[in-house]
Length: 263
Image 1 (tube, rainbow, N blue to C red):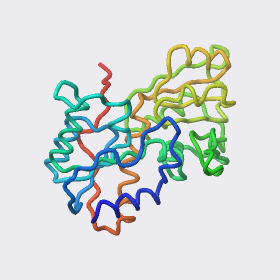
Image 2: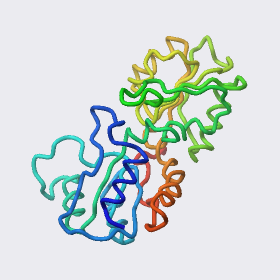
Image 3: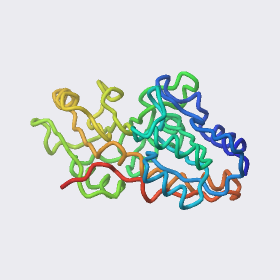
């Protein structure tokens, strides 16, 4: 399949105009060597290990949820990891595309996948997208039945396929039932700030953001940044394959892992 056809399909799935204004999305690396794409590699982060995997699996198109290029690159040398990856992609004829927050905003995107393990009666975006007021960043849900904070934590550990999460609860509300939950993929401190919900669920928040939330009487459940995102890749991969009419193999990276380990 032609690169242009793949990009057109990705744009129909999640238009890049839906990404946040600060984001860097779309086609970020385009080698001069034009070639047919047979294998696509899905990853959260494009690390050197993921690049080697793409080369080994003959994937000449990487969909990297997080943008490999975010801050301006002033020089391409072998001294820095990101530069080495950019050079490696170009040398091996690998295109790199990042959807990032456009995938967060869309219906059935990352944030909807996060709350899919909950039994809720209502759901809405926390922050509406200026280009489409029916979608947006984060999700706020009302649960069908109240749940304890620890029960919700157990539910999400299973959903995220992890063994540990970090839970902060107000002293006055330990054991109190949770009725509303606000979620944000990745780092949700700024988006969730002040949202009227019993519990915040995200990948990471700063120490002071957590303190502010529990001072407002809210529970906070943290999983690590990419844990909120990585499981979505297995959900979206067959959908992408179908949208691409099965002309391309869509693979989920084995080398893309959470860089933080609990020891």
